[in-house]
Image 1 (cartoon, helix red, strand yellow):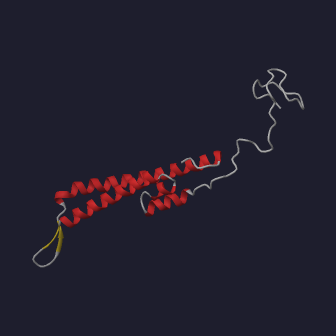
Image 2 (cartoon, helix red, strand yellow; image 1 turned 90 degrees about the horizontal axis):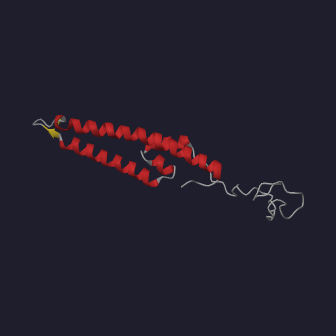
Image 3 (tube, one colour; image 1 turned 180 degrees about the vertical axis):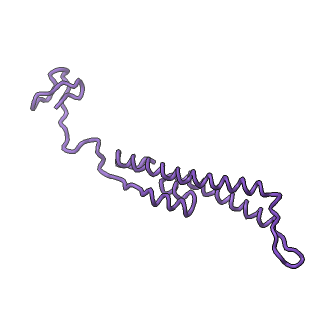
Length: 146
């Protein structure tokens, strides 16, 4: 056993260090750095599946609720915007045939769709990295990081 103050080797059964005079602490049977409670790890596959089903739910599963709700809200706003554009540019002709005239808003629709795809890919990657960080922290410390 070594002195925690100076690092000198202690004699067996001694209560004080010969080098610095510090009190020798008796070690407990359990290591002090090991927690008594271990949080369960999270499944990366389940997080990715949740992201595929509802974009943003993977971040919520990983414990980042604010980020997941933000991604979900952005997806809802983009979906509503696309629906309004489609419905606003649909019309019936004299013979009751439905037509769509997307030419005026095609650039906006394309931009929104591309942004939605980029957000989806980011969400997949973010879910993966968040769950990996969560699991690594749980394995190392025994408790959740956030």
